[in-house]
Structure formats: C-alpha cells, structure tokens
Amino acid sequence: MTSLIDIQNQIALLQKQAEEIKATQLAETIADILAKMEAFGITVDDLDRSKGRARKPAAVAKSGNPAPIKYRGPNGETWTGRGLMPRWLAAKVAEGQAKETFAV
View 1 (cartoon, helix red, strand yellow):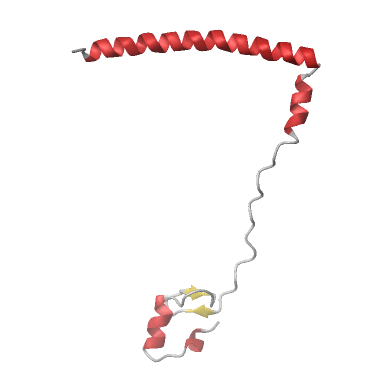
View 2 (cartoon, helix red, strand yellow; view 1 turned 90 degrees about the vertical axis):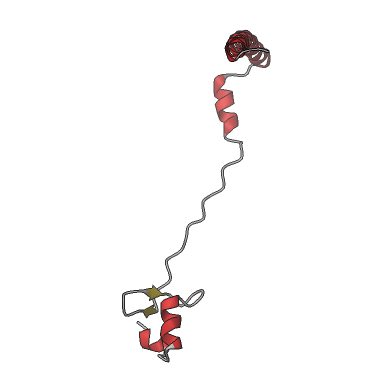
C-alpha cells in the first residue's frame, strides 16, 4: 500500500514534468505561429483588425421608465396596479374597503 507522502511526491514529480512539457510545447507553438504569420505576411495589426469581425456581445436590455404608483397603503406601501394585488391591499379589500380608496 502506498502512503500519502509517496502519492504527494508522485504528484509533485508529475506536475514538474507537466510544466516542463508545457514550456517546451509553448515555445514550439509560438515558433510555429510566427513562422505561419511570416509565410502569410500577417502582422499583429492584422490580428487586431480581425477581432472587429468577431461577434459582438448582446446588448443589455434597458428597462423603461418604472410604472407610476397608482395605490398607496396606510403604512406607505405602494402598488402600480400591475401584477398580482399585494397582500396589504387584498386584506383591505377583504375587510370591505374599496381599492379606489387607496388610489393616489
């Protein structure tokens, strides 16, 4: 059975090997890209210009003006008249008061 220390040592060794391979491949990849850029006559400015053709992020929808308040409760609660009737107004209507009593 392998111990935790042995496994941690193996992990450290493998991580070191991975970093070395990555460094080697990075240099090779950069050299390959530079060679292709030179062969095709591509400059860094060309790459920057090509970004402009990329898909632009979707615009964030702006909310319009908030709906005006149509009803105000005795404790300062408000309702625009849109959506479900709020509990405070539903309770007052259930008590027999007209909803128009709270109209602003």
